[in-house]
Image 1 (cartoon, rainbow over the protein chains, first blue to last red):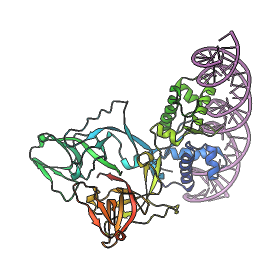
Image 2 (cartoon, rainbow over the protein chains, first blue to last red):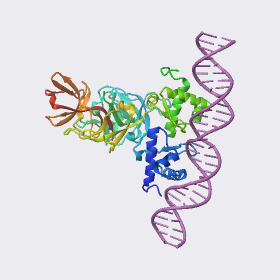
Image 3 (cartoon, helix red, strand yellow):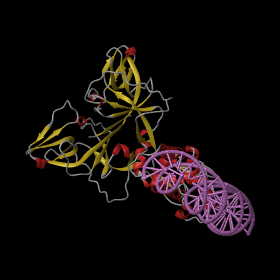
Image 4 (cartoon, rainbow over the protein chains, first blue to last red):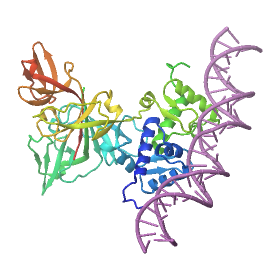
Length: 217
Length: 217
DNA sequence: ATTATAAACGAACACCTGTTCGGTGTCAAA
DNA sequence: TTTGACACCGAACAGGTGTTCGTTTATAAT
Protein backbone atom coordinates (compact mmCIF):
# COMPACT_ATOMS: atom_id res chain seq x y z
CA UNK A 1 0.00 0.00 0.00
CA UNK A 2 1.68 3.21 -1.17
CA UNK A 3 1.37 6.61 0.44
CA UNK A 4 -0.85 7.87 -2.37
CA UNK A 5 -3.62 5.38 -1.97
CA UNK A 6 -6.60 6.29 0.13
CA UNK A 7 -6.75 5.35 3.78
CA UNK A 8 -8.81 2.31 4.59
CA UNK A 9 -11.95 2.74 6.60
CA UNK A 10 -10.26 1.29 9.67
CA UNK A 11 -7.23 3.52 9.35
CA UNK A 12 -9.46 6.55 9.22
CA UNK A 13 -11.23 5.35 12.33
CA UNK A 14 -7.91 4.88 14.11
CA UNK A 15 -6.81 8.41 13.23
CA UNK A 16 -10.10 9.85 14.44
CA UNK A 17 -9.81 7.78 17.62
CA UNK A 18 -6.36 9.23 18.33
CA UNK A 19 -7.59 12.77 17.70
CA UNK A 20 -10.70 12.42 19.85
CA UNK A 21 -8.92 10.67 22.71
CA UNK A 22 -6.25 13.40 22.69
CA UNK A 23 -8.87 16.12 22.80
CA UNK A 24 -10.79 14.49 25.58
CA UNK A 25 -8.02 13.18 27.78
CA UNK A 26 -5.04 15.33 26.89
CA UNK A 27 -2.89 12.30 26.19
CA UNK A 28 -2.86 9.71 23.40
CA UNK A 29 -4.56 6.28 23.55
CA UNK A 30 -2.69 2.99 24.15
CA UNK A 31 -2.78 0.27 21.50
CA UNK A 32 -5.42 -1.51 23.60
CA UNK A 33 -7.52 1.70 23.89
CA UNK A 34 -7.44 1.99 20.10
CA UNK A 35 -8.30 -1.69 19.64
CA UNK A 36 -11.33 -1.42 21.91
CA UNK A 37 -12.53 1.64 20.04
CA UNK A 38 -12.22 0.32 16.49
CA UNK A 39 -12.98 -3.35 17.16
CA UNK A 40 -9.55 -5.00 16.96
CA UNK A 41 -8.93 -7.52 19.74
CA UNK A 42 -5.20 -8.01 19.37
CA UNK A 43 -2.66 -5.31 20.27
CA UNK A 44 -0.30 -6.55 17.59
CA UNK A 45 -2.87 -5.89 14.89
CA UNK A 46 -3.25 -2.34 16.14
CA UNK A 47 0.53 -2.06 16.00
CA UNK A 48 0.46 -3.20 12.39
CA UNK A 49 -1.99 -0.42 11.47
CA UNK A 50 -0.06 2.20 13.41
CA UNK A 51 3.02 1.20 11.44
CA UNK A 52 1.11 1.74 8.22
CA UNK A 53 -0.10 5.13 9.35
CA UNK A 54 3.42 6.06 10.43
CA UNK A 55 4.93 4.99 7.12
CA UNK A 56 2.42 7.13 5.28
CA UNK A 57 3.26 10.12 7.41
CA UNK A 58 0.03 10.67 9.31
CA UNK A 59 1.45 9.88 12.75
CA UNK A 60 4.81 9.69 14.43
CA UNK A 61 5.72 7.20 17.11
CA UNK A 62 8.35 6.91 19.81
CA UNK A 63 9.16 3.18 20.07
CA UNK A 64 8.87 1.42 23.44
CA UNK A 65 7.40 4.51 25.00
CA UNK A 66 3.97 4.21 26.53
CA UNK A 67 1.38 6.16 24.56
CA UNK A 68 4.22 7.27 22.31
CA UNK A 69 2.03 8.42 19.44
CA UNK A 70 1.52 11.88 18.06
CA UNK A 71 -0.32 13.21 15.03
CA UNK A 72 2.09 14.51 12.42
CA UNK A 73 1.49 17.92 10.84
CA UNK A 74 -0.18 16.35 7.83
CA UNK A 75 -2.17 14.00 10.04
CA UNK A 76 -3.43 16.91 12.08
CA UNK A 77 -4.32 18.78 8.92
CA UNK A 78 -6.26 15.84 7.55
CA UNK A 79 -8.23 15.61 10.78
CA UNK A 80 -8.87 19.30 11.11
CA UNK A 81 -6.94 19.26 14.35
CA UNK A 82 -4.54 22.10 14.66
CA UNK A 83 -1.50 22.69 16.77
CA UNK A 84 -0.41 25.90 18.36
CA UNK A 85 2.51 28.07 17.39
CA UNK A 86 3.96 30.72 19.64
CA UNK A 87 4.76 33.92 17.75
CA UNK A 88 6.95 36.51 19.49
CA UNK A 89 5.50 40.01 19.77
CA UNK A 90 8.56 42.15 19.16
CA UNK A 91 7.15 45.64 19.53
CA UNK A 92 5.03 48.16 17.74
CA UNK A 93 4.51 49.31 14.20
CA UNK A 94 3.79 53.01 13.78
CA UNK A 95 4.08 55.30 10.81
CA UNK A 96 6.94 57.47 12.05
CA UNK A 97 9.50 54.81 12.84
CA UNK A 98 11.06 51.68 11.36
CA UNK A 99 9.84 48.37 12.72
CA UNK A 100 11.98 46.29 15.10
CA UNK A 101 14.50 43.96 13.50
CA UNK A 102 13.84 40.41 14.70
CA UNK A 103 16.71 38.37 16.10
CA UNK A 104 15.57 34.76 15.90
CA UNK A 105 18.72 33.44 17.58
CA UNK A 106 17.43 34.70 20.93
CA UNK A 107 15.81 31.85 22.80
CA UNK A 108 14.31 33.93 25.58
CA UNK A 109 11.36 35.80 24.21
CA UNK A 110 9.02 38.08 26.13
CA UNK A 111 5.51 38.62 24.97
CA UNK A 112 4.01 36.08 22.56
CA UNK A 113 0.74 35.38 20.80
CA UNK A 114 -0.39 31.78 20.37
CA UNK A 115 -1.95 31.00 17.01
CA UNK A 116 -2.99 27.84 15.23
CA UNK A 117 -0.74 26.55 12.50
CA UNK A 118 -3.66 26.22 10.15
CA UNK A 119 -4.30 29.95 9.82
CA UNK A 120 -0.59 30.71 9.55
CA UNK A 121 0.58 28.24 6.92
CA UNK A 122 4.36 28.40 6.62
CA UNK A 123 5.60 29.51 10.05
CA UNK A 124 9.22 30.31 9.26
CA UNK A 125 10.60 33.67 10.41
CA UNK A 126 7.29 34.98 11.76
CA UNK A 127 6.92 37.64 14.35
CA UNK A 128 4.13 39.91 15.54
CA UNK A 129 3.79 43.66 15.95
CA UNK A 130 1.14 45.77 17.64
CA UNK A 131 -0.23 48.64 15.58
CA UNK A 132 -0.01 52.04 17.22
CA UNK A 133 -1.91 55.02 15.92
CA UNK A 134 -4.34 55.54 13.09
CA UNK A 135 -1.92 56.30 10.28
CA UNK A 136 -2.36 52.91 8.62
CA UNK A 137 -5.99 53.33 7.80
CA UNK A 138 -5.10 53.16 4.09
CA UNK A 139 -4.03 49.58 4.76
CA UNK A 140 -7.39 48.93 6.51
CA UNK A 141 -5.43 48.47 9.70
CA UNK A 142 -6.65 49.87 12.98
CA UNK A 143 -4.93 51.11 16.11
CA UNK A 144 -4.48 48.09 18.37
CA UNK A 145 -4.46 45.48 15.59
CA UNK A 146 -1.79 42.79 15.61
CA UNK A 147 0.16 42.31 12.40
CA UNK A 148 1.98 39.05 11.74
CA UNK A 149 5.15 39.65 9.71
CA UNK A 150 7.68 37.44 7.98
CA UNK A 151 11.22 38.71 8.17
CA UNK A 152 12.54 39.32 4.69
CA UNK A 153 14.38 42.07 2.83
CA UNK A 154 12.66 41.48 -0.49
CA UNK A 155 9.18 40.71 -1.72
CA UNK A 156 7.68 39.65 -5.01
CA UNK A 157 5.56 41.96 -7.08
CA UNK A 158 2.14 42.38 -5.53
CA UNK A 159 3.06 41.18 -2.08
CA UNK A 160 2.20 43.32 0.89
CA UNK A 161 5.20 44.60 2.78
CA UNK A 162 6.18 46.91 5.60
CA UNK A 163 8.10 49.52 3.67
CA UNK A 164 10.39 52.10 5.27
CA UNK A 165 10.51 55.21 3.05
CA UNK A 166 13.90 56.69 3.82
CA UNK A 167 13.42 60.24 2.62
CA UNK A 168 10.02 60.56 4.32
CA UNK A 169 11.10 58.81 7.52
CA UNK A 170 7.91 56.79 7.40
CA UNK A 171 6.71 53.19 7.59
CA UNK A 172 3.84 52.19 5.37
CA UNK A 173 2.06 48.90 4.62
CA UNK A 174 1.34 48.47 0.94
CA UNK A 175 1.50 46.09 -1.96
CA UNK A 176 4.81 46.57 -3.73
CA UNK A 177 5.20 46.60 -7.52
CA UNK A 178 8.62 47.06 -9.11
CA UNK A 179 7.99 48.84 -12.40
CA UNK A 180 11.11 49.54 -14.41
CA UNK A 181 13.03 52.18 -12.54
CA UNK A 182 10.36 53.10 -10.02
CA UNK A 183 8.22 51.51 -7.30
CA UNK A 184 4.44 51.54 -7.06
CA UNK A 185 2.98 51.20 -3.57
CA UNK A 186 -0.66 50.18 -3.68
CA UNK A 187 -2.90 50.61 -0.60
CA UNK A 188 -5.08 47.73 0.58
CA UNK A 189 -8.03 50.11 0.54
CA UNK A 190 -9.20 49.77 -3.08
CA UNK A 191 -10.74 53.25 -3.10
CA UNK A 192 -7.37 54.87 -2.59
CA UNK A 193 -4.70 55.74 -5.15
CA UNK A 194 -1.19 54.28 -5.28
CA UNK A 195 1.93 56.27 -4.60
CA UNK A 196 4.99 56.10 -6.82
CA UNK A 197 8.58 56.23 -5.65
CA UNK A 198 10.93 57.20 -8.45
CA UNK A 199 14.13 56.35 -6.62
CA UNK A 200 14.08 52.65 -5.52
CA UNK A 201 16.89 53.37 -3.06
CA UNK A 202 14.36 55.19 -0.90
CA UNK A 203 12.38 51.99 -0.53
CA UNK A 204 13.49 49.67 2.23
CA UNK A 205 11.58 46.40 2.64
CA UNK A 206 11.38 45.54 6.30
CA UNK A 207 9.17 42.50 6.20
CA UNK A 208 6.26 40.84 4.48
CA UNK A 209 2.76 41.21 5.92
CA UNK A 210 1.25 37.78 6.47
CA UNK A 211 -1.80 38.39 8.64
CA UNK A 212 -3.80 40.99 10.51
CA UNK A 213 -5.73 40.20 13.67
CA UNK A 214 -8.18 42.57 15.27
CA UNK A 215 -9.67 41.79 18.65
CA UNK A 216 -12.66 44.09 18.71
CA UNK A 217 -13.23 45.89 22.01
CA UNK B 1 -0.33 25.03 51.47
CA UNK B 2 -3.53 26.72 50.42
CA UNK B 3 -4.62 27.45 46.88
CA UNK B 4 -3.96 31.14 47.29
CA UNK B 5 -0.28 30.94 48.01
CA UNK B 6 2.28 31.22 45.23
CA UNK B 7 3.68 28.19 43.51
CA UNK B 8 7.09 27.08 44.70
CA UNK B 9 10.02 27.31 42.35
CA UNK B 10 9.98 23.56 41.85
CA UNK B 11 6.27 23.44 41.14
CA UNK B 12 6.68 26.07 38.46
CA UNK B 13 9.46 24.03 36.92
CA UNK B 14 7.27 20.94 36.91
CA UNK B 15 4.45 22.78 35.16
CA UNK B 16 6.84 24.14 32.55
CA UNK B 17 8.30 20.65 32.09
CA UNK B 18 4.84 19.23 31.39
CA UNK B 19 4.06 22.01 28.91
CA UNK B 20 7.36 21.72 27.04
CA UNK B 21 7.34 17.94 26.94
CA UNK B 22 3.77 18.01 25.57
CA UNK B 23 4.70 20.48 22.88
CA UNK B 24 7.78 18.55 21.85
CA UNK B 25 6.56 14.99 22.09
CA UNK B 26 2.80 15.30 21.76
CA UNK B 27 2.23 13.32 24.95
CA UNK B 28 2.78 14.09 28.63
CA UNK B 29 5.88 13.08 30.63
CA UNK B 30 6.00 10.16 33.09
CA UNK B 31 6.78 10.81 36.73
CA UNK B 32 10.33 9.64 36.06
CA UNK B 33 10.65 11.99 33.05
CA UNK B 34 9.59 14.88 35.28
CA UNK B 35 11.97 13.80 38.04
CA UNK B 36 14.92 13.70 35.65
CA UNK B 37 14.07 17.14 34.34
CA UNK B 38 13.65 18.95 37.66
CA UNK B 39 16.19 17.02 39.73
CA UNK B 40 14.00 14.75 41.87
CA UNK B 41 15.29 11.17 42.06
CA UNK B 42 12.28 9.51 43.57
CA UNK B 43 9.06 8.93 41.62
CA UNK B 44 7.04 9.18 44.80
CA UNK B 45 8.32 12.69 45.45
CA UNK B 46 7.21 13.69 41.98
CA UNK B 47 3.84 12.14 42.74
CA UNK B 48 3.63 14.27 45.85
CA UNK B 49 4.18 17.47 43.85
CA UNK B 50 1.73 16.41 41.17
CA UNK B 51 -0.86 15.94 43.90
CA UNK B 52 -0.20 19.45 45.14
CA UNK B 53 -0.56 20.87 41.63
CA UNK B 54 -3.75 18.89 41.10
CA UNK B 55 -5.25 20.08 44.37
CA UNK B 56 -4.57 23.65 43.40
CA UNK B 57 -6.21 23.17 40.07
CA UNK B 58 -3.31 23.55 37.66
CA UNK B 59 -3.38 19.98 36.35
CA UNK B 60 -5.75 17.08 36.20
CA UNK B 61 -4.74 13.45 36.51
CA UNK B 62 -6.23 10.10 35.63
CA UNK B 63 -5.08 7.72 38.38
CA UNK B 64 -3.24 4.49 37.43
CA UNK B 65 -3.12 5.56 33.83
CA UNK B 66 0.30 5.88 32.28
CA UNK B 67 1.12 9.51 31.48
CA UNK B 68 -2.32 10.38 32.81
CA UNK B 69 -1.66 14.08 33.26
CA UNK B 70 -3.18 17.05 31.50
CA UNK B 71 -2.93 20.79 32.04
CA UNK B 72 -6.18 22.22 33.34
CA UNK B 73 -7.62 25.36 31.71
CA UNK B 74 -6.12 27.56 34.41
CA UNK B 75 -2.82 25.71 34.24
CA UNK B 76 -2.65 26.27 30.51
CA UNK B 77 -3.51 29.92 30.96
CA UNK B 78 -0.78 30.40 33.56
CA UNK B 79 1.75 28.85 31.21
CA UNK B 80 0.66 30.75 28.16
CA UNK B 81 -0.15 27.43 26.54
CA UNK B 82 -3.30 27.62 24.58
CA UNK B 83 -5.85 25.14 23.44
CA UNK B 84 -7.68 25.13 20.18
CA UNK B 85 -11.32 25.96 19.59
CA UNK B 86 -13.13 25.00 16.43
CA UNK B 87 -15.36 27.82 15.18
CA UNK B 88 -17.98 27.00 12.53
CA UNK B 89 -17.86 29.09 9.37
CA UNK B 90 -21.54 29.56 8.62
CA UNK B 91 -21.43 31.55 5.42
CA UNK B 92 -20.70 35.00 4.13
CA UNK B 93 -21.30 38.53 5.24
CA UNK B 94 -22.06 41.03 2.47
CA UNK B 95 -23.70 44.40 2.50
CA UNK B 96 -26.84 43.51 0.62
CA UNK B 97 -28.12 40.62 2.68
CA UNK B 98 -28.69 39.64 6.29
CA UNK B 99 -26.13 37.30 7.85
CA UNK B 100 -26.92 33.61 8.45
CA UNK B 101 -28.69 32.77 11.71
CA UNK B 102 -26.60 30.26 13.62
CA UNK B 103 -28.19 27.08 14.92
CA UNK B 104 -25.89 25.83 17.66
CA UNK B 105 -27.99 22.72 18.26
CA UNK B 106 -26.61 21.19 15.06
CA UNK B 107 -23.75 18.88 15.90
CA UNK B 108 -22.61 18.30 12.34
CA UNK B 109 -20.83 21.37 11.12
CA UNK B 110 -19.20 21.86 7.75
CA UNK B 111 -16.37 24.32 7.38
CA UNK B 112 -14.56 25.43 10.52
CA UNK B 113 -11.63 27.61 11.50
CA UNK B 114 -9.39 26.54 14.40
CA UNK B 115 -8.32 29.34 16.69
CA UNK B 116 -6.59 29.50 20.03
CA UNK B 117 -8.70 30.18 23.08
CA UNK B 118 -6.34 32.92 24.19
CA UNK B 119 -7.15 35.28 21.35
CA UNK B 120 -10.85 34.55 21.60
CA UNK B 121 -11.52 34.96 25.30
CA UNK B 122 -15.08 33.90 26.08
CA UNK B 123 -15.97 31.34 23.41
CA UNK B 124 -19.72 31.05 23.92
CA UNK B 125 -21.98 31.36 20.87
CA UNK B 126 -19.17 32.16 18.44
CA UNK B 127 -19.30 31.60 14.72
CA UNK B 128 -17.34 32.85 11.73
CA UNK B 129 -18.30 34.56 8.49
CA UNK B 130 -16.32 35.26 5.33
CA UNK B 131 -16.49 38.83 4.05
CA UNK B 132 -17.62 39.21 0.45
CA UNK B 133 -17.17 42.45 -1.42
CA UNK B 134 -15.65 45.79 -0.60
CA UNK B 135 -18.64 47.49 0.97
CA UNK B 136 -17.34 47.23 4.50
CA UNK B 137 -14.31 49.39 4.00
CA UNK B 138 -15.76 51.88 6.48
CA UNK B 139 -15.34 49.14 9.11
CA UNK B 140 -11.73 48.65 7.91
CA UNK B 141 -12.75 45.22 6.74
CA UNK B 142 -11.53 43.81 3.46
CA UNK B 143 -12.96 41.37 0.95
CA UNK B 144 -11.87 37.89 2.06
CA UNK B 145 -11.48 38.72 5.74
CA UNK B 146 -12.95 36.37 8.31
CA UNK B 147 -15.17 37.94 10.96
CA UNK B 148 -15.78 36.15 14.26
CA UNK B 149 -19.26 36.91 15.60
CA UNK B 150 -21.11 36.22 18.83
CA UNK B 151 -24.77 35.44 18.37
CA UNK B 152 -26.84 38.01 20.22
CA UNK B 153 -29.84 40.21 19.54
CA UNK B 154 -28.69 43.10 21.63
CA UNK B 155 -25.45 44.92 22.33
CA UNK B 156 -24.30 47.48 24.83
CA UNK B 157 -23.60 51.05 23.87
CA UNK B 158 -20.32 51.30 21.99
CA UNK B 159 -20.10 47.65 21.03
CA UNK B 160 -19.53 46.73 17.42
CA UNK B 161 -22.37 44.82 15.85
CA UNK B 162 -23.57 43.46 12.53
CA UNK B 163 -26.62 45.60 12.00
CA UNK B 164 -29.35 44.85 9.46
CA UNK B 165 -30.98 48.12 8.38
CA UNK B 166 -34.46 47.06 7.41
CA UNK B 167 -35.51 49.99 5.26
CA UNK B 168 -32.22 50.00 3.35
CA UNK B 169 -31.98 46.22 3.03
CA UNK B 170 -28.35 46.45 4.05
CA UNK B 171 -25.92 44.89 6.54
CA UNK B 172 -23.35 47.15 8.14
CA UNK B 173 -20.70 46.69 10.81
CA UNK B 174 -20.56 49.62 13.20
CA UNK B 175 -20.42 50.62 16.81
CA UNK B 176 -23.95 51.07 18.12
CA UNK B 177 -25.00 53.89 20.44
CA UNK B 178 -28.58 54.14 21.66
CA UNK B 179 -29.25 57.85 22.11
CA UNK B 180 -32.74 58.67 23.34
CA UNK B 181 -35.08 57.83 20.52
CA UNK B 182 -32.51 57.31 17.77
CA UNK B 183 -29.48 55.15 17.04
CA UNK B 184 -25.98 56.33 16.17
CA UNK B 185 -23.89 53.95 14.07
CA UNK B 186 -20.22 54.83 14.27
CA UNK B 187 -17.73 53.43 11.68
CA UNK B 188 -14.48 51.83 12.82
CA UNK B 189 -12.64 54.17 10.46
CA UNK B 190 -12.16 57.23 12.69
CA UNK B 191 -11.98 59.59 9.70
CA UNK B 192 -15.56 58.79 8.71
CA UNK B 193 -18.77 60.28 10.05
CA UNK B 194 -21.48 58.37 11.90
CA UNK B 195 -24.92 57.73 10.54
CA UNK B 196 -28.07 58.27 12.56
CA UNK B 197 -31.19 56.14 12.40
CA UNK B 198 -34.23 57.98 13.74
CA UNK B 199 -36.50 54.96 13.92
CA UNK B 200 -34.91 52.24 16.12
CA UNK B 201 -37.28 49.68 14.64
CA UNK B 202 -35.21 49.81 11.43
CA UNK B 203 -32.20 48.60 13.36
CA UNK B 204 -31.87 44.86 13.76
CA UNK B 205 -28.89 43.56 15.72
CA UNK B 206 -27.70 40.31 14.16
CA UNK B 207 -24.60 39.66 16.19
CA UNK B 208 -21.70 41.19 17.97
CA UNK B 209 -18.36 41.51 16.18
CA UNK B 210 -15.63 39.88 18.26
CA UNK B 211 -12.67 39.57 15.93
CA UNK B 212 -11.42 40.14 12.39
CA UNK B 213 -8.77 37.97 10.80
CA UNK B 214 -7.08 38.82 7.53
CA UNK B 215 -4.81 36.29 5.85
CA UNK B 216 -2.91 38.50 3.46
CA UNK B 217 -2.44 37.03 -0.01
C1' DA C 1 -7.15 -25.23 -7.03
C1' DT C 2 -2.93 -22.67 -5.70
C1' DT C 3 -0.30 -18.70 -4.36
C1' DA C 4 0.64 -14.30 -2.41
C1' DT C 5 -0.60 -10.57 0.35
C1' DA C 6 -2.87 -7.98 3.77
C1' DA C 7 -4.87 -7.92 8.03
C1' DA C 8 -6.30 -9.92 11.60
C1' DC C 9 -5.66 -13.42 15.80
C1' DG C 10 -3.63 -14.88 20.46
C1' DA C 11 -0.13 -16.02 23.85
C1' DA C 12 3.69 -14.64 26.04
C1' DC C 13 7.42 -11.70 27.26
C1' DA C 14 10.22 -7.60 28.73
C1' DC C 15 9.99 -3.60 30.76
C1' DC C 16 7.74 0.61 31.68
C1' DT C 17 4.83 3.19 34.84
C1' DG C 18 2.13 4.60 38.76
C1' DT C 19 1.67 3.55 43.42
C1' DT C 20 2.53 2.03 48.21
C1' DC C 21 5.05 2.16 52.30
C1' DG C 22 8.33 3.34 55.48
C1' DG C 23 11.88 6.43 56.24
C1' DT C 24 15.00 10.85 56.50
C1' DG C 25 16.10 15.74 56.65
C1' DT C 26 14.96 20.58 57.17
C1' DC C 27 12.67 24.36 59.08
C1' DA C 28 9.74 27.00 62.06
C1' DA C 29 7.11 27.43 66.09
C1' DA C 30 6.20 26.34 70.73
C1' DT D 1 14.34 20.24 73.11
C1' DT D 2 10.12 18.64 70.95
C1' DT D 3 6.64 18.66 67.53
C1' DG D 4 4.51 19.16 63.15
C1' DA D 5 4.59 20.17 58.37
C1' DC D 6 6.75 19.86 54.15
C1' DA D 7 9.52 17.74 50.78
C1' DC D 8 12.25 14.63 49.61
C1' DC D 9 14.38 9.49 49.56
C1' DG D 10 14.48 4.40 48.05
C1' DA D 11 12.83 -0.25 47.54
C1' DA D 12 9.40 -2.93 46.07
C1' DC D 13 5.06 -4.08 44.11
C1' DA D 14 1.08 -4.48 40.84
C1' DG D 15 -0.32 -3.99 36.67
C1' DG D 16 -0.16 -1.43 32.46
C1' DT D 17 2.02 -1.18 27.91
C1' DG D 18 4.54 -2.08 23.70
C1' DT D 19 6.59 -5.77 21.32
C1' DT D 20 7.67 -10.40 19.45
C1' DC D 21 6.43 -14.51 17.27
C1' DG D 22 3.79 -17.76 15.13
C1' DT D 23 -0.74 -18.64 13.29
C1' DT D 24 -5.20 -17.99 10.92
C1' DT D 25 -8.42 -15.80 7.78
C1' DA D 26 -9.98 -13.41 3.75
C1' DT D 27 -9.29 -11.81 -0.77
C1' DA D 28 -7.49 -11.30 -5.34
C1' DA D 29 -4.84 -12.99 -9.03
C1' DT D 30 -3.21 -16.77 -11.64
